[in-house]
Length: 399
Ligand SMILES: Cc1cc2nc3c(=O)[nH]c(=O)nc-3n(C[C@H](O)[C@H](O)[C@H](O)COP(=O)(O)OP(=O)(O)OC[C@H]3O[C@@H](n4cnc5c(N)ncnc54)[C@H](O)[C@@H]3O)c2cc1C
Image (tube, rainbow, N blue to C red; front, side, top):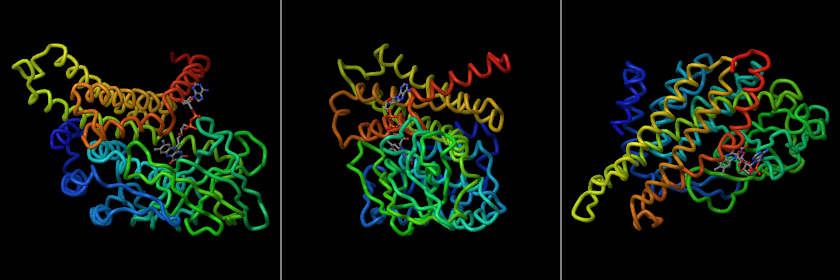
């Protein structure tokens, strides 16, 4: 962990002097890394249920002002740069990728609120700065990669929208107090039919259910939201009707870079594990690293992890420019492929041991595979990159 902190510090001299950093690193080392292997969650009676260590972790994070870093100062948060949030995501990726995803989803719900009315921001953001979790719910059975196919019906009836339908694979299900929900306000399929709403966890007619066990990311509660005649007040509409997809896609651009950060941190953790193992493990009277093939594989891993981090830092420099969508997609595409590749190779380098479930490398590999789906699969990133390239080629002659 200290090595990763030093690497990150070299990119942003002075970062370690920020007030929260030492506390955050201590929590990662003392509470999060030691519990990584056994912390799991399940959803029961509309609530995510965690082992007792969870409460200790969350209290420590609250005390260290961690939740405040995602919220602007005018709503009870603290000033943070994009690069600092990225560094925290790398560190979380190293310590507990599932916990990292919990905070990515939380951060996206906050981003949606930031497009809301003054009243919405005043009502929700201070609570989120104090530790109320958020979630963002787009995916449905028939609307996965194609978010424009969202069918969850939000029918306007006076001062309410009546919600009927379901969301699936939603991170922070049962943990979040506040959900940003993409719903269909027109009743016909299409991007301009979608609107985004703020929904609280105690909404009448909302049932939150678990799903079958995942391969990895065990600490991340991932479930289903089922709405039956649930009345959402009209004041909870964010932005205008029909603008929901645009708002959501903008927010996801920022999420991609955070997922990419988690991928880099996780890839570095796997690299450290295998680097250590390959030095210790002896066969044919020599450590594994004496084989040129193995030492070249290790060099390749390290080079590709740094290349992925380079793409992330490149994207961060383009934040708020028209090129951010391409660069954040490139970073997510490349970093998720690197972490999956590093994990698969590391498991093989560990020999038979790497095949057993209780081995750390196996758990980290399962987490690595999860990175493929979050904020869009690799094919979807390629689709975004090629679409944006065509647009730039025709309009701006940038390619
Ligand atoms: C652990 C986890 C947490 C998640 N958290 C959330 C969350 O918090 N909120 C949320 O809304 N969703 C969440 N999701 C859902 C996730 O965003 C979707 O799984 C993802 O967008 C892919 O959708 P899908 O699973 O329906 O796959 P599909 O869209 O059915 O895709 C299946 C395959 O086809 C490929 N594909 C699809 N269309 C094309 C095309 N036109 N060209 C080429 N290839 C294509 C895809 O790349 C994929 O490989 C989560 C998923 C997981 C696994």
